[in-house]
Length: 284
Ligand code: C2E
Ligand code: MG
Ligand code: MG
Ligand code: MG
Image 1 (cartoon, rainbow, N blue to C red):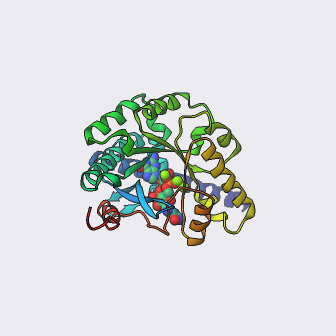
Image 2: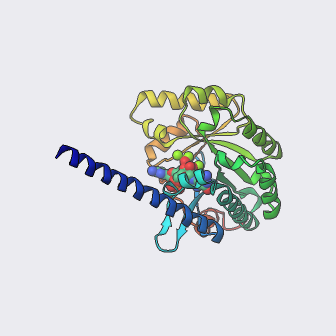
Image 3: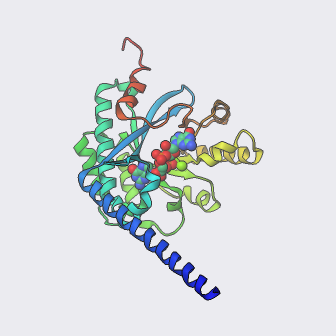
């Protein structure tokens, strides 16, 4: 009996594995289709000056516009996009679309209120060696200056051997593109490495921001991080601000910029533009 049960369990396990594999393959082929058809859209979340509460830029966040499932969040497809390499053409679409949109906004908005757009990029996008050319072409095609673009790379790029990526980022930074480290959680290796890398901005991860009000240890870490960043000439963006208490404390600690549901969830391009125009004085 025991042996029979074991065999059944094994079969069920095999069937489960098979099912998961089929699901992944299906996801991959649907994603491949989406990349070819351009079935994506971008949501924009304002990046706020914590001193004035005004938006200064927007982070572009990709969504999959699925024909039957509707709008699909990146958590559900980014892993497959990365390991299949589809993140490369998808990332190109994201960059083009984000720059096209920020170009439109900048044509409409007055000189003193020109927003930038911040685009998430995966280390995988650097692998074919054409990243710098791709960004330069996208900027030229959209007709925006490099200062209108910020690139976000996650903290993991700071550990391990990514010299070719840093070389590319140094070139883009010399042009005027800004480089941000996303989801910064101040692991000791990350802290030690920011100083010697071509970086302009660190984005403090939401997990850290959440702790500042209730946890003195987290508060001390974030305060230290803000001071360190300032000493290194870096800007700080606090991510995931949901609560006015967090906002007030971060502002008091000298954190210059922030984003989060307190201000706005990610919205479509039209809504993002109204967030900017609604704040303009009536007579320019
Ligand atoms: P991220 O770059 O750290 O983006 C912040 C995420 O937190 C976004 O989720 C945003 O909607 C969410 N968020 C913003 N404010 C709040 C808040 O106050 N509270 C909470 N709980 N969440 C908040 P989203 O849009 O689902 O994106 C998830 C991740 O997917 C992003 O994290 C980024 O790493 C990745 N991603 C998004 N777009 C792209 C892209 O175009 N290319 C690549 N390679 N990755 C992308
Ligand atoms: Mg980001
Ligand atoms: Mg982030
Ligand atoms: Mg994050």
